[in-house]
Image (cartoon, rainbow, N blue to C red):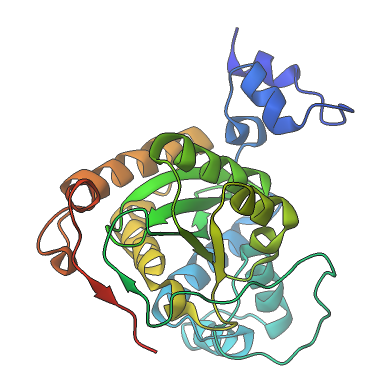
Length: 285
């Protein structure tokens, strides 16, 4: 049966089975069901790609500075448009922000546990983050779970929405394949603070750690992963479909884990560091 025919079997409003579970039952990926996110004209998709590239270089740029940057490079945009596109991409400047909204009462913000902690072995600390993946005619979101000491990518998922489901799937896969860490570190995004997400971790006996607001350096290794992936893979290929993106990103992650040496790991690859003893890492205050 073709993928298209299997997609027709999915019932979005099914009273008991989530879309994720239905996709598994009919043997298609969740991103194959959704396809790349669309709904933006080509001009906006190009702006989103440019915004993403600049954000890798200057993550402290908010919508005001990003608007100025685009205008300097010949794009006639207003701040309202840039703000809307950055919100859709899930981008926020990393400076300290005033409290302009009330957190969800059920979403606890957990303390940051890694400051001054010596991380000297695999599976001591895992981290996770999400990033925007531009495509030729749409975009997707990518979540990855990384081992902090070895920089190894343990699991990853693509989705066309930023809901909590694909993040949970990535963590469940990482734990099924590699066990569980002592500490799991994320940012304070609502999907990571969701009781469903933190509950998965605490039920497994994992301590939850969250970056300070506006401190992208607290999760710096996975931020470096995004930068390398986008310049070495995503921006070079301009993927057409979700399946192309999945295959291309999968090949790059396999290369990153197995064949890309890191100077911080003594010239070893993440696979080699994960299977052995990684160098000691001291986090500055």
